[in-house]
Image 1 (cartoon, rainbow, N blue to C red):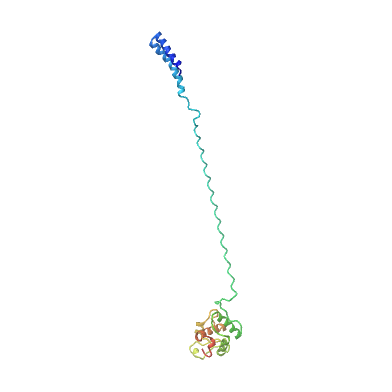
Image 2 (cartoon, rainbow, N blue to C red):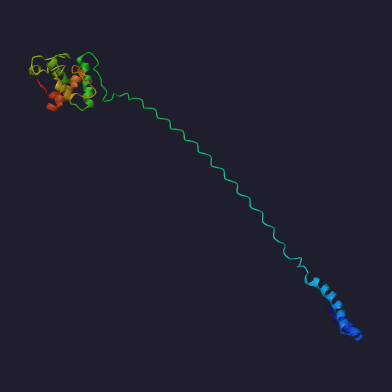
Length: 207
């Protein structure tokens, strides 16, 4: 506030004191000062600078993440195609049963020797043929009803005159269990002779 403004009330107060005493001066002073105080009040309550920072805007809420799509279920694997069973071998299985074929001694001996070879049973064509001629003369149904075996109830039978207990004990897989079958009889007899004498070739008489 400037000095002249302060001097005006003082000058007026002196005039009032001279004219009417202290009471008049007090009234005059109150009236002169009050408006100034009122006028000055708004300056102290001036608003804050216009450059004050404006309140920050609330941040926008973040969008929720989109739910992930569930994984597609995997397709079940196709069952494997069962493999086709292999075709049976053209070769005869050792365990297969083969009945005698042919109608003559030569064929029977050759078929028997094929079986013997698969089972490592020794014997030559000559040795087999020689013993067959002596024992049965080549008759597959020959039977001995007069020797000790016949007396004991087990007569020898077939091409190589084998008794039933010996045939059963030395029967070879792949042949029939018919004691008078030519191939089955030859192979069983040769198997017995190999065990007892080393080979049918070593047999020159009753065995």
